[in-house]
Amino acid sequence: MVETPVLIVGGGLAGATLAAELGFRGGSCLLVEQNAGENPHLRANMAGQRTMEVFRRWGLADKVLNASLPRYYPVNVVFSIRLNGQELHRFSLPSIAEFQDPESALRAELPDVDYSPYFKTQIGQNFLEPVIREFAASFPGVQVRQGWQLVEFSQDKEGVIAQILNPASGVRETVKDSYLVACDGGRSIVTKSLGVSGMDASFLARH
Image (cartoon, rainbow, N blue to C red; front, side, top):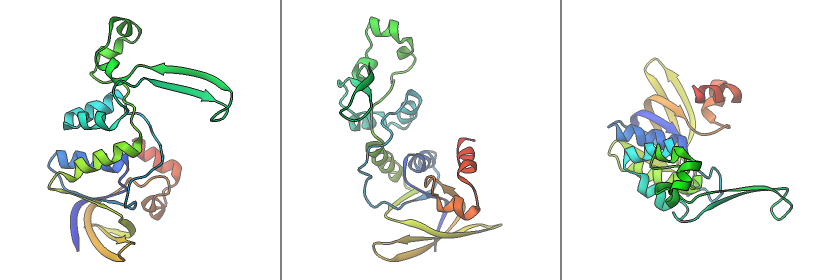
């Protein structure tokens, strides 16, 4: 039996960030992510100012910037009826480098560039997740297992007993934990097992 204070199910941005913060604060946890590799699909494509400040607090901001679009690339956002169809609207954002060292014209247009050393960092979720998971795994109290999934769990007054499985090897393990955190998306096995609807799960995630 594996024992851990916190079992985090889902190694996306939410789960990886929670594991990293627990490790950063000297805590312990086990993170399981069912995908053995990295998700090749483009999803969320931007980290905001406050997010970058969290990464700076961790000492991770430069690694995130290095994994993002090159710092001197401008960002063009185009709205069209299809990929190569009629263009409806477009706007441009300055590059990361321009935001980090703003000229007077940019300061006049966007005065909040002086409020933080970061603005909007263009980085796809599929490039950001590996950076955070690697950082989380660098802490002695954090164990990250990719290619593992939660199969079932039960709860009593002592905590949670969970069964996790590595489908590739067929290895199954029992995990005893005080807290089980569902970070595994809208089709979460945890929320389904607890009878929590998608709307309720969304409410809980925000609060």
